[in-house]
Length: 466
Image 1: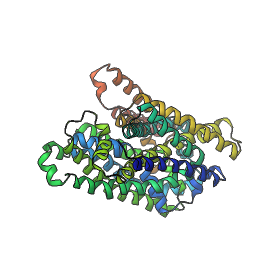
Image 2: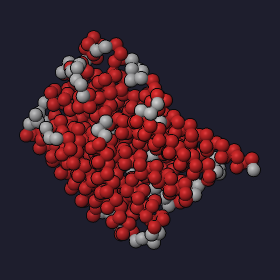
Image 3: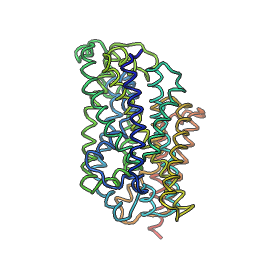
Image 4: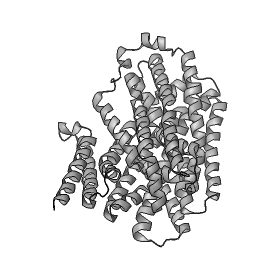
C-alpha cells in the first residue's frame, strides 16, 4: 500500500490539473485559443504536445507490459512513434503550418475539404472522431487500471475518478490547458521513467548482466513480439502521424513553420531515452516477477514494491501524467470534430465564437463520458489503441498522401477510398470478434489499406482516361 506521503503527492497532482484547467479557461478569448492556443506556441511547447499526446498508456503502461511478456521487442511500439514523428517533422510539419496560415484552418477535416470536397470532409470527420474516441478510451483504461492498483479501489471507481478529472480540465481549459499541463507532464515523465526509474531498477537487481543471465533468450530477440503484430504496428503507427488530426492541430498551433518542424523533430529525439527507460523497467520486472498473470499491472507492482517512499509517489504521478496527457488532446480533438467540422460547417455556419466554445465544452464532456464507457467495456489497452490506429491509418493515409504528392487529386477517389476502407475495417473487426472464419484473424489494417489503395488508384486512373 502507498504511504500517506505518496498518496498525497498523487492527489495533489490531480488537483493541480483541475486548477490549471480553470486558469487556462480565463485566458481564452477566441475559438482559435480554445483549439490551437492562438497559433503562438514555441518549439518546446510543440515538442511537449507531441510527447504528451503520443507517449501515453500504451507506450508506458502497455509498453512495459509487452516488454515484460516479450522482452526488448516490446519497445517497438514507442520506436514506431519516434519513426512517425521523425518522418512527419522532415516532410510534413512546415507544409502543414503553411497550409494552415494560408487557408485559416483549425482541423484536419478543414484541410481535407480544402483539397477535396464537402462529402470527403464528412467521412474524414467520422473516421477521425471514431479513432480519437478510441485513443482516449485506451488512455482512460490505463489510468483506471493504475489508480485501481495504487489505491486498492474497484476498477470502475478508479476509471471514473481519472476520467472525471481529465474531462474537467480539458473541457474548461481547452488547448491552453492541454499545453500547460503537458509542460508539467513531460518533465514528470522524464524524471519518473528515466532519472528515477532506471537507477531504482538497477539498485534492485535490474542490471544488464543480471538480465542476460536470468531471463530467457527470447527476451533479447528483436522480433519476440511476433512479426505480424510488429509489422502492423510499424505501418499503422507512423501512418497515423500523417492522418491524426492532433498532428495538424499542433502544427496550426505553432508560431511559424520553422518552429513547427523543429518542435516535431525534438519530440522524436525525446522519445529515445523513454524507450530505453521503458525497456529497462519491463526487463527488470520480468526478472523480479517471472510468473505474473496480469502483465497490465506489472509496472504498478514494480513501483509499489521497489521504489522508496516519496520517489514512489513521483513515479506514479509520472505514469498518470503519461496517460492523462494523451487522453486530454484526444478528447479535445474529437470535440473539435463535432463542433467545428459538423455543427459549424453544416448546421449553423453563423454561430458566434462564444456559442461555439460552449458547444465544444459540452461535446468534450460527452465524448469523454463515451470514451469512459468504452474503456469500462474493453480493458485491453493495446487492443483498443491498435483498433483506433487501424481505423485512422487505413482509411485516411492514401488521400492524405495524395495531397502532398499530387497537384490535383480526384475528389471521388478520395471520398470512396475513405468510406469503403472505413467500412472494411469495421466489418473485418466485427467478423474477427465473432470468429466467423480463420481469415478474419488477419489484422484489419491490411484489408482496409488494400481497399483504400485499390479504390483510390482505380477511380483516379479511370477519371484520367476519360
